[in-house]
Image (cartoon, rainbow, N blue to C red; front, side, top):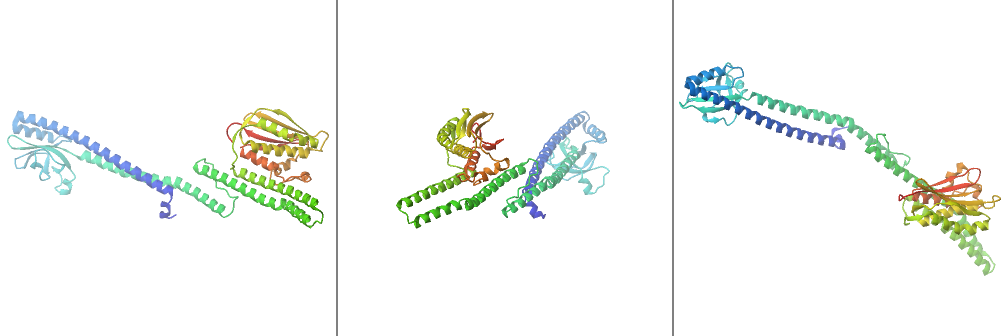
Length: 467
């Protein structure tokens, strides 16, 4: 990857910004420490020079100029000695351990304004050698107009300054190397994951909705983003599949009633019978139309619920009251069909939901149970129960009819699906599909079970406020 392309990446930019921030902080810290240390060293040097001046002043008071010169010579020969100069009023050096000074040092009295260069005895007279030594000093004019200079070499502070600046350069170099390593091992890995996500996204945009974004298993923000997007893609794929199924089912399952409706209307027009026969034909046509309208309304309701939005109000509902209403409504129909409809156990349970939707779903299930149980045994029975089970409410409708094979139960909840055993019964195949959509809207689930004949359809609601 080219350098300009690399610098366009977020990882490279973050690394560069962190490097710049660390470098600024390091420079500021080093210069602060350097200034503080130099100030402390300068104060220590001034104190040492003041002590030397005090000692030489006492020597001058005791022995005059000869005594002062004698003390200067003794101290000048000691290892690590300070700078000592005794000069005449014109600045010519008479005694001390300094061979020459930077011009202008004796022009002022007291502390020198700035560090100056000098050369010790025995060193090369080359100016470059002299410039390697710097010092600060105090210049004093004696009562006889002679000049006394007491100073201290600044080699240690300069060495300290050099060490600090070298340390700064080394620190910035290490930080630069660290930034490169972070980019290489972390940034490149992030870029590879982004590239893989981009590649999968292009395939998805190309029409391959089975493709999913990669998940590394690290549990970081990339994985969380990929998991959320994959869940969204699963939802989109499910909605597309539902739309495809609806289109196919409408084309197949609604074609027959529409054709029958047209033929009946055509036959009514062509009939030579009287008005009474035509009215009867029109009534059957209207009934057929009402059934088609009901089917389309169920399809629209299922689509809205599966899409996750609905205009239906959500409140606290009493499931036991809904059970009582539905059982009371279907008791006459069950009695006409020779089916015993009763309740076994009904606990008082409240859930968050929509009373009309839950009632419609339960009505569809009870209606199916009565329809497919009638005439199948000596004592056809449909049992409705409501139980509180831990954190869920289980509303079950059980019958002793023919039931549904285990391998067909999942397919039975799809739209327009009618099993072979139910082809002789009227209906559109939307009852269980609508119940499943209603349960999905209520964050619950629809369960089909049953052994040794019969079928139990359970609507399992989460109790509490989570709908």
